[in-house]
Image (cartoon, rainbow over all chains, first blue to last red; front, top):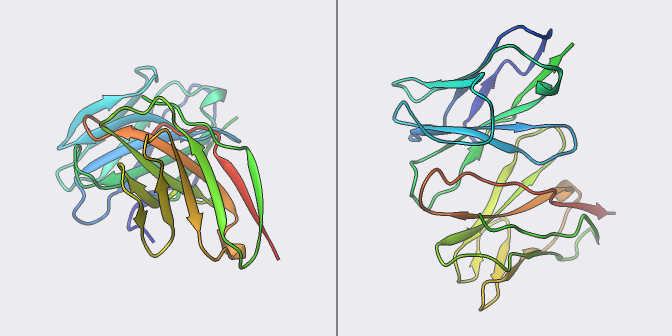
Length: 114
Length: 111
């Protein structure tokens, strides 16, 4: 148990729709990172939020966006869903950037696009 | 970010030590070596990390060579529950510390 919780656990959407995924970070952590894991692949970094600001972004288009709230929970929003967006979306929390401490992951949201 | 190379799969007998190698020959002086594992349908689980000294915790030991170009994760007494994909990741301490996952090593523990 890492203390990182994600909701929902599973979700089915159709092409063109929009989706919001949620993450509650571990107590004492103020940094949240989001990753996408396609079937059979390792997770790919989407972006990181620290103190409610984006603090780094991977190679994902602008239709992937995020928010971090004052309580350090976070949302991942994806607009105009495409079939290739089908994946496991993982959230990881950590103390803060630059600290010699690991990121701790939730068990993810499985998103299926029909 | 430095890249890592791991064998795609390994087998180990239950109760024996599992030694998982990782090559990171382009590692920079400010980059740490992290190990995570992922059991089917779960999120990655943090195992251990280090900079240049060997590290040990309740889960595993991490041996980093003196030139830091490779490392070995050791699970001292493997159990069936250690069957998972193990990822070796190199990441700098500065910045967003994004974790760049490769394909990892699929470790199977056999009874």
